[in-house]
Image 1 (cartoon, rainbow, N blue to C red):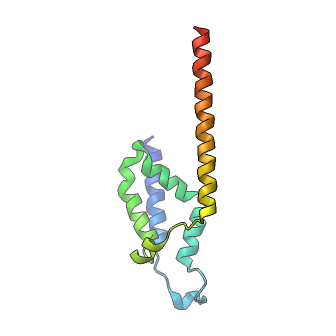
Image 2: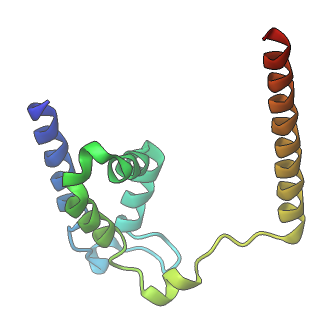
Image 3: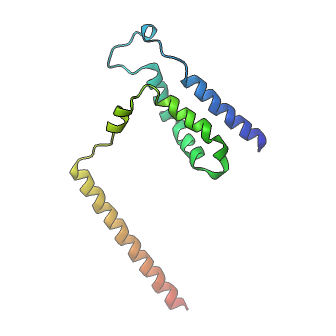
Length: 127
């Protein structure tokens, strides 16, 4: 268990160190609308599922000693993004999607209530 904790901490530190490598726009030679190397690295982390692992580590009680590493990782991941851009970024959904989702949620609630009613009826008849 101690070896696993040490390995996890090393992985978090390595990830942080890779993300802190400074960008060199002159050497990247990219167009204005092209993603930077930092952005591409974060996209690869997303596609590989590393961000899900980081979220699991952050929410687990057994790994709470890594919270400062995780906080630092999030800070480094968002280093090139201004607070204004983060505040404006939201998942925009149209009204049609919201209505569809609320109908689906209502249907699930109704189905769950019906299942509970059937289970209670089965328990009452078995007694």
